[in-house]
Amino acid sequence: MRLRPYIHSHDFNSIKNWITDKRTHAMWSANHAPYPLENEAFSDFLAWIYPKYGDCPFVATTDDGTIVGFICCSINYETNEAMLAFVVIDPAQRGNGYGRGMIQLAAKYCFEMLKANMVQLNVFTINEKARKCYESAGFKERQTTPDAFAFGDELWGRCNMILNR
Image (cartoon, rainbow, N blue to C red; front, side, top):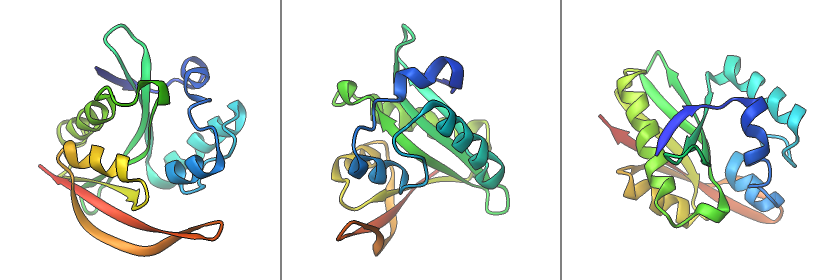
């Protein structure tokens, strides 16, 4: 598995159909990204999050170049903490270890290239499969905020997870 920068003109068509319903979209982006994922709106969203949060998008590929995942990485220079966000694996590829592999590669990038002291991410408590994936990559719960996000008539807790150097 490899991690490389996301190139919108090359990669969008590979990931655009991974988020197929509003609930999955909310779990993935907390409704920050546009739904449905459309070319120009997603490009504008990625251009907006970089200056606001420092998020740099990447794709995870198999060794033959097949795109299997998408993730954003950023660093807070004041706290020296990196953040992983907008994590998604191609639904057809789930269960093959690609999620854990992508998270581990992204954390390695944050530690080695961004020189972060720790890496964090957030996951909704209802997204148990993602949480187990992050735990298998070494992340531990730091804090859970109950009822942090409303989706329809549901209230979801948000779990902040960390991985120390």
